[in-house]
Image (cartoon, rainbow, N blue to C red; front, side, top):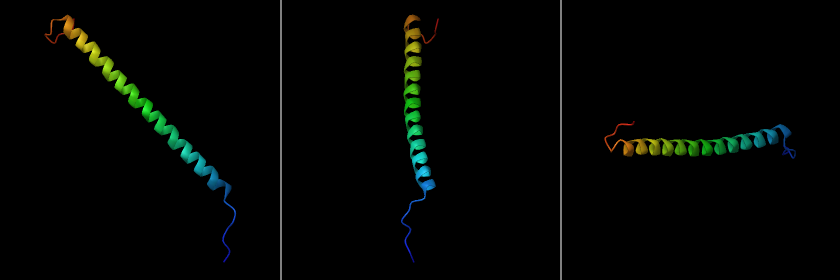
Length: 61
């Protein structure tokens, strides 16, 4: 029985596309996490600023 010496080109393409897709998804996921953290920080800052303006009564004016 002979061992195959050639690598199927479709396997190479599949591997490159799979690794590339996973890399892109990981990068997008990291940016989504950063955007979510920024949005949470901004919302907290706005709420705290409104609370200070109202004298700490928890009401936004």
